[in-house]
Image 1: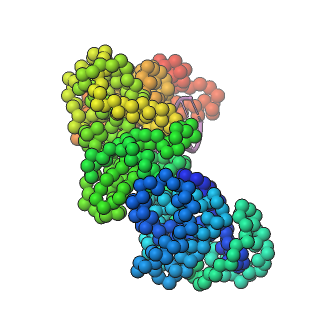
Image 2: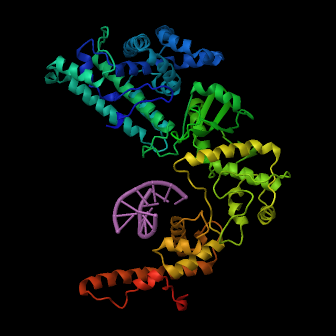
Image 3: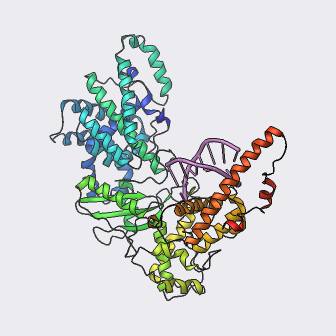
Length: 580
DNA sequence: TTTAGGG
DNA sequence: CCCTAAA
């Protein structure tokens, strides 16, 4: 069962425990078996219908957050009223009205019977707005359920698994429904009831009777709820860096979380209606970095057209390109296509879509370094091995190349002489005052990175000299002992792990095998590639021999003359010079 | 932890 | 460069 975890919307616990599990049959048969799950699902439904309205209202109420308590109380109570107002809209098929009735009851009960939930409810409303409005404006018809699924896919389009979940749970709903209709399933309400009580101890089962009509309608509605819950669940996962493999950690998401509006408003800068401004800041949750690995994020806001406000949160390890795509998708979904999204960082265009946002900041700093005039001691960028005041590249005669690729695709100066002069004269670190903000941001960034469990390492292309060193080491040591290679040739290069070296060798071999026309990136001298091929062949053969001798040894109990294990261990074996 | 290989 | 099964 996938849905076992708590459904937490990131504000206060909504605590939908085991949401889809309580068999509907239990709830159906006894009028008093009104479950909390149902209430919450209904709340979603209702929220969906309220979304537009609420969005409008929150737009005009700048002081709303000052009186959260009141709002919490009142919203739930007003739900019914608001919904009725909304009923004026043409979209209210028969089945929807039924569901609407339920939703209203649920909402009022949430407020009256459970004070805690009322507050949560308000928050849920905020978060659910975008999703619910999009997915549920049109009532529960099968086609619309499909649309719903599609949107779920959009939300989670990083991996496209949302559809799977939707279908999956739809299936479960079907099953539940079948069970419900099963005549033998109508045996004893008493038993079911006690089971139900076990499932949801927290809530009294003595609910006022609720008249619920057509089963079919109910089925449609519940299946919808399931999907909403699914999406909200997904949302929650990404929000808290939940490590569901399907979604990975770089997943992006966005929402209309009005709760963040005021906080964001203070810090954001909006250059123009199409620009995106990055303003790194702490998460709303404060700096509990220890628990929330995702508590730091680069947040963006967009001011655009008729969209009141669109908030997008992406991991700082998201690439510029993925950010643009996310924005594009979000906006496109709302107002249609034909939009170009650009990224401005400190008023500089960042054009390279493959850079991560962190790298973009580093890049900015590098720019500061080469072009600035002020001199201050040391600035820690927070980016490992990117300390700006020192050219630290081991095993490389050309440290300047270390940073060069990062800035190669931007508007910032990439003049080699500038970079080199920086590299060769690592004395003062000039930092224009105007970019203090960026540096501050990165300083915060460092704090975050320490707590970030798996920060993607920035891309560091191998310099020619590094390749040379690697080839040399592999010639001597072989292809199966990358730790030794690392120790021998890259001992002081902290940013090169043995996995890096192994990977680089892999690509080198590949590069050497393909035709020069197919090669990309800064060319590796053919001489080195030739050596790569020779060494690769030699050590492949060597390894084969070793395997063979191993078997031979096993069979005959005597070492074979091809056994070079000892030589390997001492590192004396190497590609014979003659073959090179 | 290190290797080996797929993603 | 990441992830991870295996060793």
